[in-house]
Length: 146
Image (cartoon, rainbow, N blue to C red):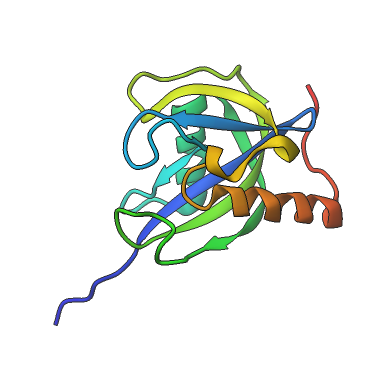
């Protein structure tokens, strides 16, 4: 018997000075849409390591994970297949945002979370950012502003 299982990704919310770091996708699905940095977990890799690795690959930043926002598992969140993501909250340790030409990203920048529109974001990241804003209101902040 063969089992059909969902794929696993890890993403990171990175905030600085009240703005969230988002990447603009360069590949399908959601070409041109904004997303949190993240990607697929490699076989033998922890979700924590994948989140840190993907943040570095897509943004050039070294991050520290400080919390888990949640697990997002709607089978329709990714049009390619059933993908489950673990959404972390991270803080910047060092580096400046930059694009790596080897990734699916064509642009990296900070955005005002409260001004983002649903149609600007890929996957279910609009819902995730709304969840993060609620979480932040309840728990406070974790990051430095440097």
